[in-house]
Length: 267
Image (cartoon, rainbow, N blue to C red; front, side, top):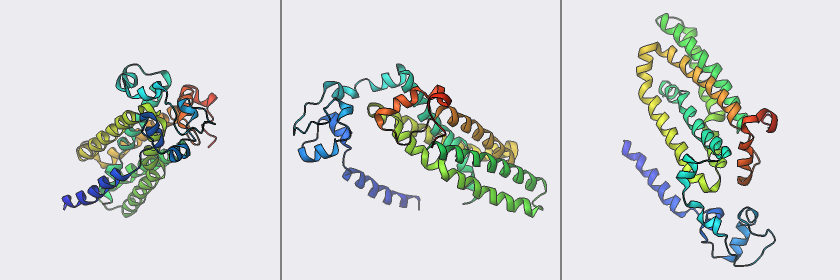
């Protein structure tokens, strides 16, 4: 039965091979050969790569600095990042870490951009706390408190609802759009690796944690982690709505003074 999952995965792999390369990648590699298509697709990014915005030449020399952007990416991203890039990397890793550390896999086990994230985490803090309370009451009563069981089910749906409002989908959108083109592949890859690591960690440890501190206690723990996530998102993840790739580093340069320099509540 598990092998059936390979069928849609195969179709997905074939579909990926047919996907067109992004214009930014084509420009960086100098592989765009269709003049008309290139002029149409590159109109938005001529300025970012050093080409005159009004240039309509069929053939344009790509600056060497753009072509060489793939060199030394690991070293520059991990060992010698700029101040803004360091905060981008922290945000990219942190958002994937907290997506699963808040315990969504545990909730699934029992039921078979900034504004969205903060709303999502605020709701999860409340519903996870409520779930911990009602499960604790239900366990201590031996299942006799029907109202506690009912409220446990309701709060479980609440956790899933608030997770899907923001933390679930926005994690992927946010991570994909914050990294500069030069570091996007590596940066997103690191974030996804953290995401999958936390997925496996929570999935494999939840039953042991429940046995050690009770099921209700486990959800109290997840609620506490959600509070940590809420604080992390508030102070370290600026609003990226409407920002171009070229503006991201400037946005994150202001992230430490986000309350003063970035209008994080505007959106």
